[in-house]
Length: 222
Ligand SMILES: [Zn+2]
Image (cartoon, rainbow, N blue to C red; front, top):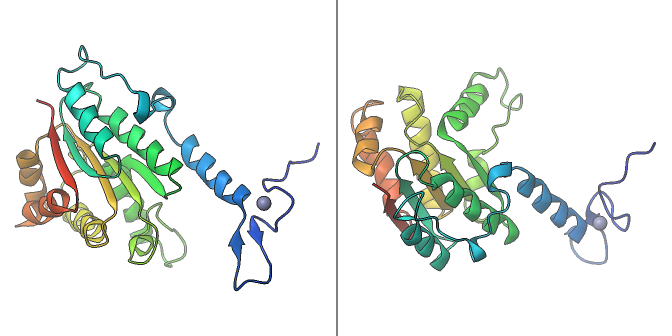
């Protein structure tokens, strides 16, 4: 049995050569990237389409308000805080899907996993040994606008390393105006107190980036 080619056959590994300067991405490669990004959506959220979502008032009385907010601006930045089971992750993954289908690079993971990923890169003996899933150099100016979804912003231990890493990431996202969507079971003031444990003033520094990024909206569900 032969392994089917991931590409369409009219291109060279997804790239088109011609009488233009440089390479062009073949539509098959673009499609492949979009499908891989969609495959990362957890099964329970995979069918959520922001266009035809029905808010579930029984789950949480503020659901209609939250969905109305994100539907009116699916490219905006959101800090969504509320109890477990309120539907916060559903909103995050629906926005991830929307960004992916818009052809943008997108990533979503828990803050604890993200920090663990950076820690592995930090302790790797050589810089190229371990490349984190969301490398800060990808977020520098001039590239595409990323979607960055971070679940459970309260769950990482507020160590010095976690505080510094989180601050650097938030600052990079803020400075280059990427799309940031955060969920947490704690409200914004609680998050600030949490991150202050990582070092004097860290809480303010981190939360200022989160709340003052372009098009930021705070959506509390308490
Ligand atoms: Zn192709």
